[in-house]
Length: 464
Image (cartoon, rainbow, N blue to C red):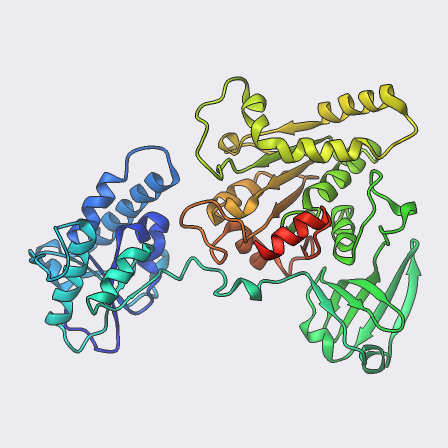
């Protein structure tokens, strides 16, 4: 295993392969080492239909492909990782081919974790001038390894962002001298009842398509970036949904971010919307109001499909009786609560009118489980994915690729409330799509900041 000392040797824990089977090809010019216990655990985890079992099987397939092109009589020399679409890799894959004693001082028993740490220590002895690092998603093995003097780190390749504070918010505050700096050669015009401004200047370089800009000084100005060309940008003044005249299904925007969100939700040119925000910022309510207006009044979409990830916060309550819709009903409390609010908006129709509206709404809203989404195609539907922070990037891809012509997809979530094990704010599917879609002309994103539920909910979100 005598390679150039500057290339590192990464020893992979099983959970890295089960989390991302393609992790084998993510270490560029460095080498990868698999202890025998990792292969054993991979074998134990391959049964079943879960995402983890699927990943374990895929990792085994990759390993077979890598070994297929190697000389198996001389495995100590390693197998080239450069296969198929990964020809750029110069690193090698090594397997544990000899027994390593596991009687480490301070570590009790021959637990899998301890065996992996023993392997890393043996490798360090074998190649003292080489940087040998243990890579694991398990915090406890990393702590144990560091206590034994073994360098260890998390698997970072799945993280879209190191710091969720850096996530794109979808809006930008304009500086006080904005008009002085950008009024040279500025054009403004009206088209189909909308006001447009074409600006040139230093800020244009940093703007993104469909990003909201706001100026809150002597004359407030709220706009969306519609076009970016060379050194100029076209800004369109947004609709004011805070004005009761421009309400959406009886709902008016209570703050600037809610107004921006309604502009995105009501725009037929935007096919994909992501709304982030803590509890009580109005994500579900605004989305449902926009969905009902465009489905029932404007007939833009044929029906509303709502789905969410069924990850319980506490203990699971076991199997539920009934059809797919009935099984999903306990998870859809948020939908019921918001429909109650939306049904109260029309005071003049009386009890009968409200009941009729409620029945009509229920016929147009379908509740679907994520488990049955494979292979579906939604045509002219308004698809709402609630609690999207609990989805992995792969699940998110599966869902968004269901959209057929005329379908709008809206993802709602709060990345501070992730209930799925092994997902973090940086690696959640919601963070992933916000980052990857951010400069596409048919995408819109906004982070809602102010809670509008109640003073109690706002205070609890802040102090608890």
